[in-house]
Length: 115
Length: 115
Image (tube, rainbow over all chains, first blue to last red; front, side, top):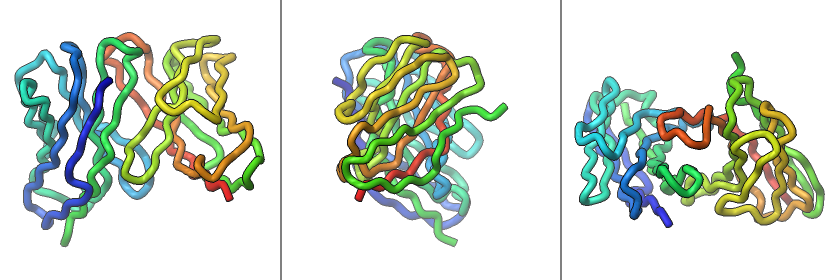
């Protein structure tokens, strides 16, 4: 069974600074996707970024980038130039090619951006 | 284009009552799913469907029923509500259950409290 771990229940960062959220996962699959979702106080789940396991190049989306280490099964999210609107819960998620292709989510990290 | 819609947004039930959480999507997606979100546990899959007439259990199916009579709708039924079912419920959909590249869209969530 796949599992996703986020070891930081809460984090805070000063506005305009950089913060890194950690995620590790466990799987025996070779073909899979990894995701970071953002959940602001509105409760809406918003896709931030995704990474395909077979791609060695780390994904980037504007101020968001990942550090994907496949051998270590690590998938961290870096937020640069943090903004107040980045305050949210962040969930790391995994989806494999097999097993119904269902998502497995980590427990989340609550990020607070301080003015 | 409404995306994924859920009703109601909030609901309070007494133990033993039954109710149906509604979910609809207008994107002609084959795959739909229900998650529950509890503090410190991320999102856990309850049931999912890969197409009209086809449903399957996820990680935490006990106490919940689903049906998929149309492509658009995927209601979640609580037959006899229990306090352990107090949670936030999310419906999600994506184009296919088979392609890793398909983006998953989430509804706005339903906050359910069982007294």
